[in-house]
Image 1 (cartoon, helix red, strand yellow):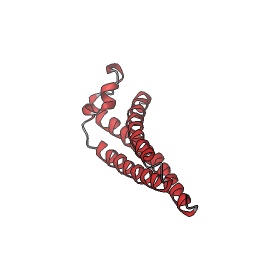
Image 2: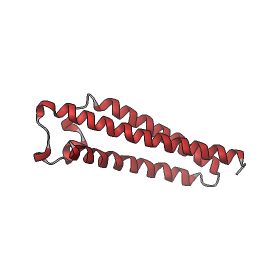
Image 3: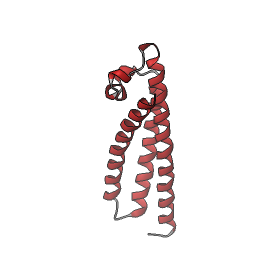
Length: 122
């Protein structure tokens, strides 16, 4: 079970890393106007929260054999087929929701920075 959690964490973290890189590049594009850059970052991270939440809901019904986590899991560590769907869905759902919470906090921070930039008239 712990190996499932580790692999799920790595796969979701990699996906979030790529999304964060895209958000960062967009924010750099707006770097001439800090308020707009942080608003764009806050909005896009909020979209990422929505995607992660949708993936958490989808994890309950998605076939476990078609997940990236299952492909990375060595065959000797795979749970028996009788409860593999339940275990995989539970682990993926928890992982997606964890990353959604962290991303929501980052979104709040970006919106707060946008508000601060607006109040300071930067």
